[in-house]
Length: 493
Image (tube, rainbow, N blue to C red):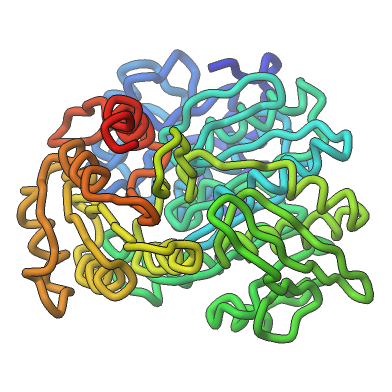
């Protein structure tokens, strides 16, 4: 990865004035790392706590490799280097990374998008609107990290603090004026945005997810709400008035707010006019102005995504026609209720839905455009929130006609145990078909589809690998379905 070419030398005491410095009056910092294996002579080593390992256990190695000082959350034995004691070393790391990079985020208009569902699509819509309006935009999220010129694969929805600073630096160097970034609950809980000031915050919705990490729904909601700690005093917030948790955040915000909604009263609203399998049209109303929006992406959830993006665009000075042209120019987002059209006489969609609400939302969107049966094939990720699995099973059973349960990313778990958890949410478990092998399950779902039916392949969306144990294997739902259709379509015509 390219990094900022001119690192700034800084005073540790200036960056972290609230910290306690032991063993030195001050430390000049030219670089900082959080991986002891990457320490170079003179680097500052920041010991980060983790769920699997703790950076504090590797301070001796960092000293051996020549670090100039250590940032720690607890006192350390005498190591021959200065120790900077802080309450939150993750937040300290983020601030240091931004300062060392010259605070590139302050040279950009940064929009942060958070929520359980819809972050990726909303972020892409916002970026496309700005681009169509003649602005150069960077985009960081699940689909990749784009610096205005080139795109890298993403391993995390929101990059780690050091990578985040580097990407902002690249955006500034590439003359971007705006940056749109997906902000995950993990990133907020781990202070990856420390030192970053957002010009706008968009909260799509807050449902249930990631309780394997956050433990409780309340902790998850609190993590999401931390995004407002990074909002500039003049920054604007966009909230979904139809989502109870998002709407409840209104009382916590002092600055300007725009609300969006379909059912509740809001500044920016949408009303569905018609929906087909290949497109939908809704009326977008902002103040006294109303304009139709025709989009190739369907579903009520996508109307919400468009409203949220529109609110951001309007708040940044775009006029309504420009906003609508941007929304309509996005024909699809990879793995987000993405149509597969190979000439087959039935619908096929690939979707990233991996929460109960997302599965239900996608199935209900398709229900309105399907004449025949709605067939859903999906699984659940291993080593993740087990409690949502029965809820996912229940949602699929309620909203689909035929359910095929299969593997998602089982990771270290037994795939059959995961399927058992999904089945426990069914009122009639015998009604579900179980095919552990995902490729075989997709083939079976497509083989049973007839004219007028629709197949939803849910859970993995844009992902191109399947994680089994510690290994990754090729697995692209879109490719698997397309190849099967091309190979078997002549038999069904």
